Length: 119
Length: 119
DNA sequence: TGGTTAAACAACCAAATGGTTGATCAATGA
DNA sequence: TCATTGATCAACCATTTGGTTGTTTAACCA
Image (cartoon, rainbow over all chains, first blue to last red):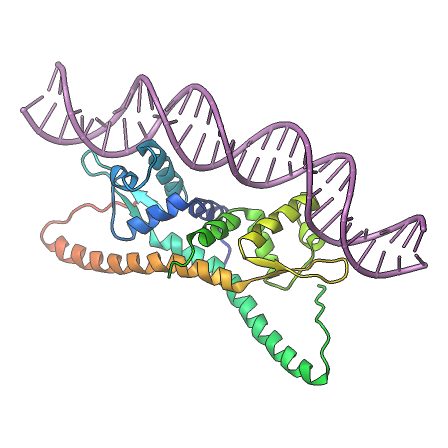
């Protein structure tokens, strides 16, 4: 369930940057080179190259070799690991909210007081 | 679909920190105070308080008032927004991989091409 | 009223991050 | 062999971030 926390660390860290998320969005439409990826942004190619390094170390993208170009492409498996992590907690809480809803409903009839949940 | 990019910005940024992700994990089992949240960590309560501020500004948690305590609790809706963003691209790419798979299959007959994916 | 507890505020510091410019490496093609 | 193109490497700078200690606010309790 929680095989490698460092993996999640780097992956979330990588997605924390809006430029890198845009790169991910771009790559979802197919692989692209550093120059192509840098084009929509007002930053240098070197900066984009750094971003791609971050994404690569996070396992979110991979780079292949194709003549002088090094096309970058997405790694959906790692994205899947992220959703798995998030859903792990999201679903738990949503279920608790459903239970809470039921409690509040029955509580309202008897004159409810606020809940205290000290663990 | 993409209502507020700044929202995603702050949410991913908030989850980029391992301490904050642990706080999320803890809150998935019920609300907790700053002191309770700080306990498992080797950092001061002030530092945890700062982390909670970040999570709160990202909309991932909310703070209520209960006597002197300010219990923190999770906001699953925002987590859901994150999975929605990720899945948006994850699914696209996986579909492309399925197509690619078909291409490679037919390609193998005519003399395969390289597709090296080093981990 | 004074004491205690929970938490935030404020100022500060070290380390990391995102960006730049300039130089270098690798592959292609004349 | 040499010039070109794509991309990385290296050094550097400004800002942000995570952390600290110390001080204040807010609510309860006696």
